[in-house]
Amino acid sequence: MRELIDASPYTVAFTGAGVSAESGIPTFRGDEGIWRDYPPALYGNLPGLALAFLFRPRRLAGLASGVLASLLQAQPNPCHRALAMLEGEGRLRAVITQNIDGLHQAAGSRLVLELHGNAFRLRCAGCGKRTEVERERAFGVLESLRESGTRRRLLKALREYAAPCASCGGRTRPDVVFFGEGLPPGEFNRALEEASRCRLMLVLGTSAVVYPAALIPQAALEGGAKVVVIDPSRTVLSSRAHLHIPAAAGRFFALWLGRESAPGQYSADG
Ligand code: NAD
Image (cartoon, rainbow, N blue to C red):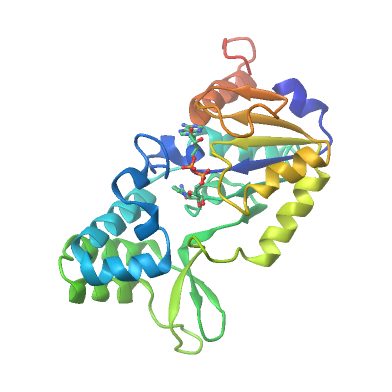
């Protein structure tokens, strides 16, 4: 893979939930995935979440506190760090991510196109202003969620999270894309541009079945780019990819980073 990266004049990465699994954030699909206990028909879209709020507030609070706790505890793993290093060395142009956890930026990646938003950002319904959710406030919300067994308490926790807009006092909501909602057009168009321009795309930890994000690796393939998939499972892209490395991304890049800093000492096929 090192040869492919070194030979490529324009490389981008497309990442999904799998790259953060080794940071402790569960994926959606698979045996350990969130959808196993919380079916997406109810918990993956806004109308379903509203129903869950009305009829299953304790369960919804359990989901929200579990997700928030994992997001707050997570630290970048070697995959996030390797991508940031490659960008710093001019060997990677951009990271296009479906993740909402902010771990690429925490690792030092600069050009990160977040197709599904960021869990630590709010968007004002009135003026559209985006604001960051400070960690301290998020920890406070987590405490409230853990005490939430009733609709009233859950509502209080949600209001603590989505505080009114500091500019116009308008209602805010998490700046994330739920199923059935559109992607931020600026990010999506820029991602499509990067995908059509790249000569090599690293597709890391994504089942590549969530649309329209899944159009990104397809655009890379249609533009003639080589695609390398790193994922322990075969995915819909594996048969069209130049190379599928059946590995956990964090483990793979830990070996890669070791080889970059001490060439010859590691045996991974980096
Ligand atoms: P997905 O759950 O559909 O697929 C995850 C993929 O990661 C699978 O192919 C799985 O085999 C692979 N995987 C699991 N562990 C891995 C590892 N250690 N290394 C590499 N690959 C691994 O997730 P998706 O494709 O990202 O799409 C679903 C949606 O999930 C996206 O919209 C994303 O926004 C959302 N999501 C994000 C987070 C996050 O921000 N960390 C977490 C869960 C879900």
